[in-house]
Length: 207
Image 1 (tube, rainbow, N blue to C red):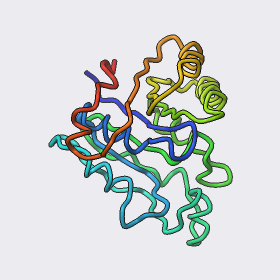
Image 2: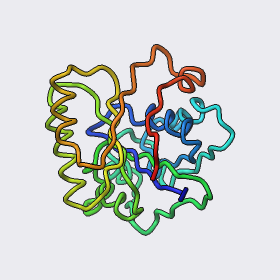
Image 3: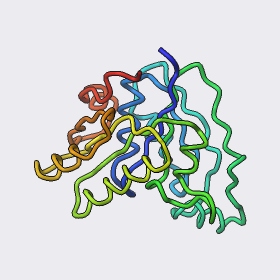
């Protein structure tokens, strides 16, 4: 099996990308990399994923950028007099699968002329889209799918994070690209190594 780069993105902010990343790192025994962390430097997404996983194969790679301000990356960078540059992102060297977690959704700005979706293209990664149920999630999901297709980015898998009404689930599933798989990740009563290790399988095949 060839090593894969998988980029976890979401239809918006706070849809559960980090929890999904932890589950996937546990199940795929992949490495983890969060290129940009804005805010919560005392308890980053890398810290959270590290606490979730129990396998010995996962390496947590250091962020390229770490900012104090909990804001959009371009704003957080500006607050520290920094401009995020495309060429600064160097993919970590590993013989393992690499799971990359983005910040927010596809068009979160890293700089005025650099969006998260540009980073996905630069990394030549397949995409995992995290969806959470809220009023407007169908529209946001279909817009995200359309954006990925328009950039010729492979949408490998969709994770429905939490409970979904049948009518919402059915519309989104009907509009997935032909080769895109999907799974449901139930709500966690608690998030820890035990509950994450017992989560239902999310991706059965990487190739």
